[in-house]
Image 1: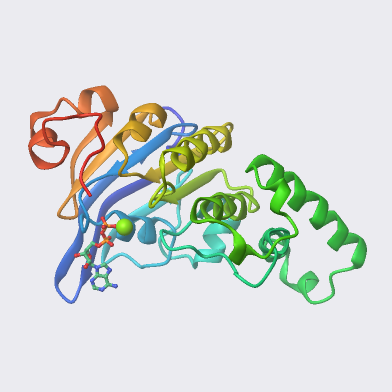
Image 2 (image 1 turned 180 degrees about the vertical axis):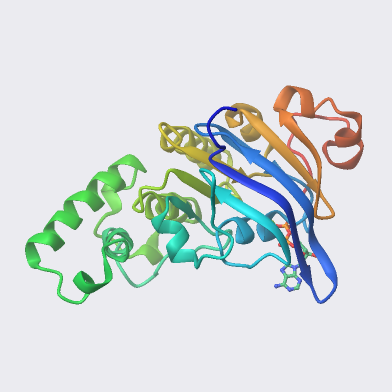
Length: 256
Ligand SMILES: Nc1ncnc2c1ncn2[C@@H]1O[C@H](COP(=O)(O)OP(=O)(O)O)[C@@H](O)[C@H]1O
Ligand SMILES: [Mg+2]
């Protein structure tokens, strides 16, 4: 037996009033890989992320992070153990500056008793760290601007920065390129590759060129179940996957 997977789901089920949004999902994410989750709208991708990150409790099944059960933990406890996620919907505070958004995220990661009496020296340290993160996500020039002034794509960059501020070993990104033009998509794809250095990344992604470029392995969800999982080049040639999702043009954009 090798090391435990970075993230693993076993027999994961989520029912909403009898409707199975997640149906017996088994999934292994190895440490250091970029793993893409694909599948049509309504396939259960976001629900799976909510289960993996503790925002939803499973109806049945287990989630482990580096071999330790996390499915009964609260989201902030899971963050503390090294898994953080960005949201499909922008979760940026619009009236704060770009830098303040990152400082708030950094403060949220400090132990509770310190949060109310943060010494000035520590706040300055957070500012410096925030500026490093903004540099990493390509937003240095926007640090002092209100987050509401950012373009859609820049907000997604900021969200990745906010997720990174928690220094996660495992990062979940839900549709980081959604709603972007080709320039933004290329920028975010490069950013994902960069933040994936030294960590494990799981991303939900509709753009098949991005998936092809980034993902070591992919998992295809359909009606809440895993249809196929494996190396991109193998999975995309799986006849069931072609029929169900990719259509006859693998590598050309995928379903809406
Ligand atoms: N909180 C909820 N209550 C009831 N049904 C939900 C809830 N969240 C998701 N669903 C349903 O579960 C299915 C999967 O949704 P979702 O995980 O958002 O899919 P995806 O992210 O793949 O588009 C959909 O049919 C959706 O309507
Ligand atoms: Mg979704």
